[in-house]
Image (cartoon, rainbow, N blue to C red; front, side):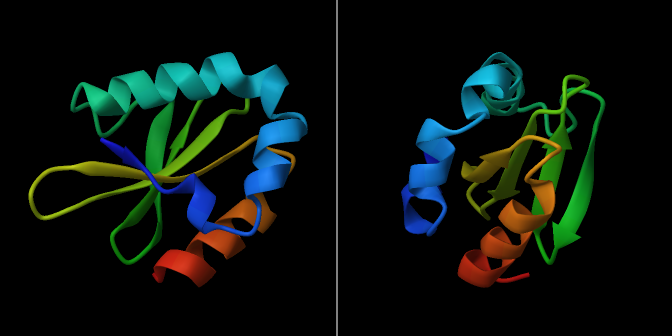
Length: 96
C-alpha cells in the first residue's frame, strides 16, 4: 500500500486540523484496506473513475484506488465535515 497524501494541496490541512479527532477511524479503514478489504467500515462508494471513498461510522473517510498490480494507493483522508473539499482535491490531482 502506498500513500499519496503529500501530492495534494490539502496536506498541511490534513496534518493539523480535525483529522486528529478522526484519526483512529482513518487508521481502522486504512488497516482494513491494507489487508485487502476493499469495502471497509460502513462501505465504499465510487467518487470517480477507479477512485473510491471508504466510510467509517465515526465520520472518517479514506480515498483510494487499486492499481492494476493490486496495490492500494491512499489518495486522501477526511472527516464528514471536509468531505466535499477533499473529494474535489482528490479528483483534481488524481483524475476521475
